[in-house]
Image (cartoon, rainbow, N blue to C red; front, side, top):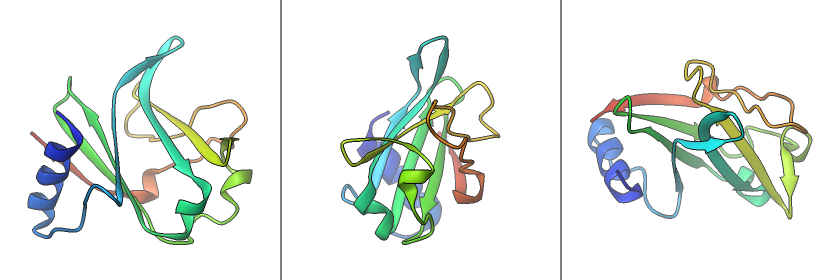
Length: 121
């Protein structure tokens, strides 16, 4: 699975061409320390516009579509670990129903309220 394929699956499921290469980040499950999960690297300026995230689990054959609306997260620098103007987010795959940033230096922000849909493939 790659970003283009994931965007196509999500757009077909939504029956609209909402997601594109410019407004969507894609992440596959990767190993981090003793955990596995998804990395999201979000420039702080991007929180002022709508962002889509497709997090893919090859093992489960599921793509989770997250959307953060423009200005929905105020003061993101206080909620996430930030390096060079980019919010680093790591969502653990150990409990995919929680969709919580588990990085030290963050506030354990939950992305559950931003879940749009789950697409099986």
